Length: 198
Image (cartoon, rainbow, N blue to C red; front, top):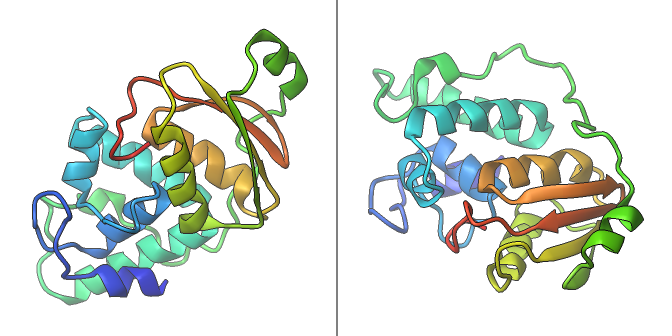
């Protein structure tokens, strides 16, 4: 994942700490590729404690092949640069190098979107086409930034990774995935998320 190497050593957009690859992976995953943050600033912006946030993020990254590969690349580079920086990234969260198992592409049962829309209609519908990974997350973040707590977006995404990427993004940002019927995803803005990451 070239983005890992591209971000490495650049400044965190919030605190100016030199970024490492894990920061880049989570920034990309959360739609922060335009202004990547260190994991501490990401956790803080979500109102989460660092270690529980990193454990949750690691579980989500492990489910998604493209992010898992970036995380493993960051692990390898970090290990080659000297002593492991436990204060930045606990070594218990290293990705197994031999982890060739494909992620579960469906971590949420399909639920009836039409029934969910009957209860509370979507404020906006967006057809994202086949946009994937960081591009989709960035646009999703920008769209939901305009929403108030409880308002919903009906997203259509034909990207192959969307059934895994969208639930992971929602879990990490605190937004709610109300209903799923790929390629459609009903997302509700939640107050735990903030403008910097939602």
